[in-house]
Length: 175
Image 1 (cartoon, rainbow, N blue to C red):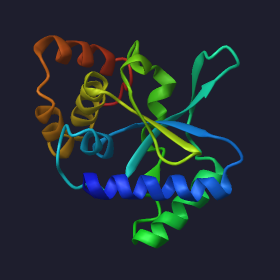
Image 2: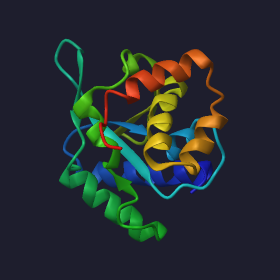
Image 3: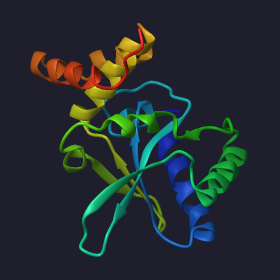
Image 4: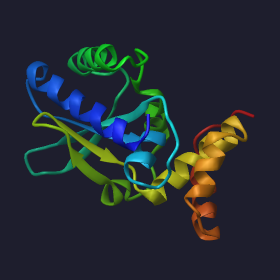
């Protein structure tokens, strides 16, 4: 999927949710689809990576809730979109949701880029600074490839890389 197709698919997801979701769904998204949609990169991607649900209390305070598992109405809407657009069943997934277990970069929600897709779906896309954190983490974890190329395309400064590296070291103690 490239930028135009991602936009079309997310609009279709929002339309499907209008018939399925009893209330507004807000999610936090990272990865290649977010980078494409925001114009940071232009490469094909296969999925949309959901980290968390965004919840607002009565006072407007934001809290993040791990997106694993995806809510039933979101799963059903994504299955319908997968059918309509010939996408893999898991094109919408909570693969990176475990990042929430160890904490996200401080101030992340102040840097997101927010878009509405219909009346029932709001997506908060990670901004450039936070994408650097996630892409460095993924590049170190998985080696050279798309994550490393995405990281280079973001043109991080030495300071940004250092902060991303310090954050990454708190997330996974595997080799």
